[in-house]
Length: 414
Image (cartoon, rainbow, N blue to C red; front, side, top):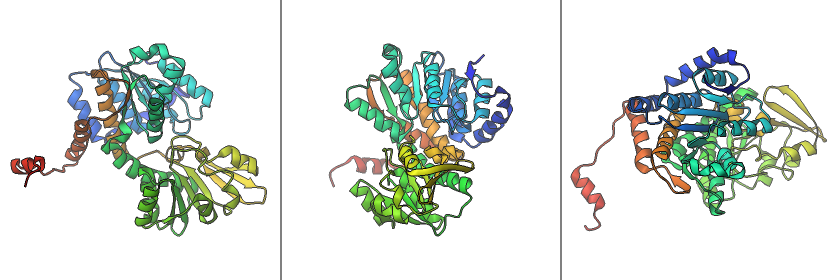
């Protein structure tokens, strides 16, 4: 019987229906389950996962259990955790510790709960589990074979640990695989962010000025879809190459101090802190919408916003309206947490099918290979195989090089 701490176990049937709907649109994960189920490659493994606990993630976790693993999971975000899905996971044999709206103290208590299972493998989203192991349970490091990391923000954090000489575990950077960032970050974030904004506000995007902070792969996806919805797009950037790329993609580029004066909707996708803060709030127009799509809720400085406001109103779900002392109303979506998950259902199913197929393969690689501490890339052959399985499931074939072409590409002579 699985152990669990969830809000209401009676919600399991509704969560199971969500999972069943999702599973039918995850052909790559289905392919991997069918490929490995006879061998039971995770038999004897204990996997601790800190991920967004919604239906797509549930498909990954249940697949791991069906392939032999003992899985202990906690939610990586209080507003992305879906109680009915948590209940269904508990019924399905996953040890799950989370509930929607959990406090930061409860969140880290749940992280410790999953570490109590003494995992061999960690699947992380934001590097909190790996960081907690290093800070609080360093004695367990020798028994942990390694981890995988899902997010840009988490990878940045792990690389900082590596640069400081603090990272004592091998971690596969799933986020940096082609099959992840070219699709999940660009198309997944691009669609799901606007799903969250439009579902929450019920407002038109066409004709508005959208300010996109950060032009990495996530920012590119959000900006492109904003333009497709008829918005005027402004990009703010620190990196001159990305700024020039945004300009050549047809967007205006300016510092946030200038963008703050003209924007109607602001979306942050940098992974950095205080991208919008006390320098910018006084410049904004009445009625602006602000949302964050970076992993942590630090990109829009909520303490500054609260200090500068007269009071906060809550007249619509997932919208905090900060009424400024001069009467302007600045609206923050989803408490400044991931707007695509706090205010919607996260990335589309087919996109997460790719990402979670990579996570499964990365976990298997960690479990079956002896790796040195540090941040590791997804093996290229694994990355390619996941994408090939996706195309095959869609009935799409690829050209194969002839022997002559292969030899030509390996040759340096005429």
